[in-house]
Length: 194
Figure (spheres, rainbow, N blue to C red):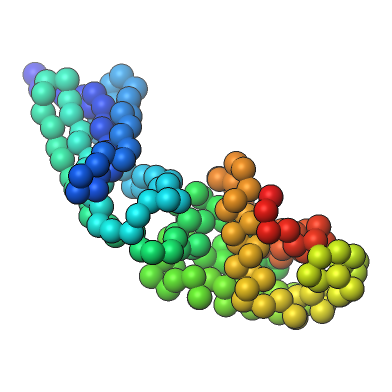
């Protein structure tokens, strides 16, 4: 007879060189034979200082066996917008195709590329916005029709919109059309704070 060992729990902890920042125990259902952590989402505190960190993963079984893995990463001076959207599972999609405008594979391209992709999406749909959107009545875009709104949007406007989304309470696990969300934000006066 072959004895099968079951996973008891996984312990994840995030440490800087001196300080335990986060710990979680993941309890697994009885009779689970294996587990694959394809991705672990950790929302880092906005006030986290720049520096080197390690994610320590320990998986143990009831019979005392353990497996450890350490993933090292660095936190930069300014948080990456793209990384925050990916880690919070927020997907913005193209209005015509429904395809995601970014994913985890784009992390190396950085925020400038994300902003450029979103600006291009606005430019490509500007003629549709001329027909579908009323004129903006308040805020930085007051007086612009839909087409002008999409054509005159700047990099800074896109960054403000993305920061607004990230600051909005409960913005996680969301999937929506970028163009529609951006238009709604602009029509509401393009607020900075939710």
